[in-house]
Length: 341
Image (cartoon, rainbow, N blue to C red; front, side, top):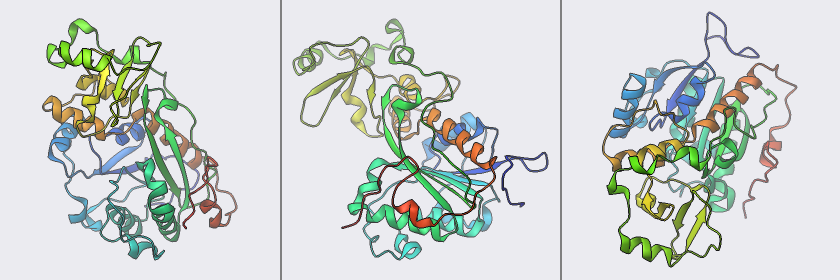
């Protein structure tokens, strides 16, 4: 596979990527928007596999821990929103060996064996501060030892044109030191909560609260001025906040704590829209399955913008390498990396 330096693609070699921990394909949609071609997908959850197949015409391979690197095609970019398990064994700064037993190790394994030119990873914001920053530092060091120039930043969904408060850490790396800047906004037209919500008369009655639940919820609202439309969010303490956007969607039953205008739950289609999926995307399965899949998904417009930023960087000649220690002092977005105690 020819090494890519400053050109996005040639007629002989279009830009390719693999989609690990793929969920229902949100990252794939982002990279396909810049013309990249997906050559391999892995996702262990069978309902997600079914939805992915219905929308992309191919069923993902299963558990990545059972797939040999030799069975993964060569590719230019590795992408993945790897799950964040408790990294209890990380902390001694041994890098690659420290991450065995975690799914990040699978990312490292494939990067080491396949040597793609670049990667793009996503995880929860809390990863940055886990174990007083030790976990994240070990991960960055390991990626650097694999030969990558690494950039990271916490990107907020609200900055990328969707009405959802969802912050995630994005990690990007290149084999050469291409000038890379994280995007600060969407490349598509932003949408508001009004754009997301379906017409009330079209909503299945099963999504509406009982009169008792509505009254009980309204008593705990502290806002003096309630915007319309709004999403009401009941937190763990029982207080109800009212906002012109949704709090972060999650895969578990937390969607039950998000109430539209104090009247009803979000529909599966609305949850997919909050993640930036187009209405042409077809969910498969029960409402509970689709809500779980939407809650686990990524914000598509964010990855459209990140993919474009990576393409722009790839189309810019690499510069004289800087010392990699700089990446442990601050991210490209000048957000300090938590220091280990």
